[in-house]
Length: 168
Image 1: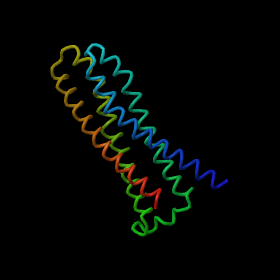
Image 2: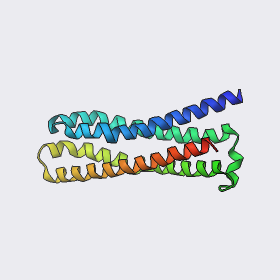
Image 3: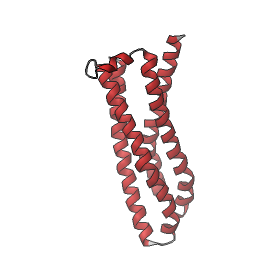
Image 4: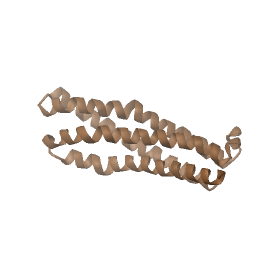
C-alpha cells in the first residue's frame, strides 16, 4: 500500500507540474498573441472571462504542485537525504526545484495576479479612449509578458530539477 501511495503522489505531483508549466506556456505562446490580435472591441469581454480563470487555474495548480511535492518527499522515503543538501544529487535537485517552484508561485501571487486584475480594471477605460489608461494597459501587458518569459525560464529549470531528482 505504501508503494501505491508513493506512485499516486508522485504521478499527481508530476501531472500537476506539467499542467502548471504547460498552462503558462500555452498562455504566453498561444492565448496571449491570439487575444492581442483580436479587435479591441472584442478583446475586452473575452479577456474579462479568460484572465480570471487562467490566473486562478495557474495559481491553484502551482499550489497543488508544491503541496504534492512536499508530500512526495515523505512518500518517497528519501526525506532524510535533505539533512545534507549537498549530500546527494537528489537532495540538491529537490531543494533547488522546490525553491524555484515557490519563487514561481510567489511571482504568480505577487505580480501576475495583481497585474492581470489591474489590466481588467483599466481595459474598459482604455477602450473608451482614456489615453492614460491606454498607456498603463500597454505597460501592464509588457510587464505580464516579461513575467511570462521569466516563468517559462523558471519552469524549465524546475523540470530539469525534477528530471535530475528522478534519475538520481
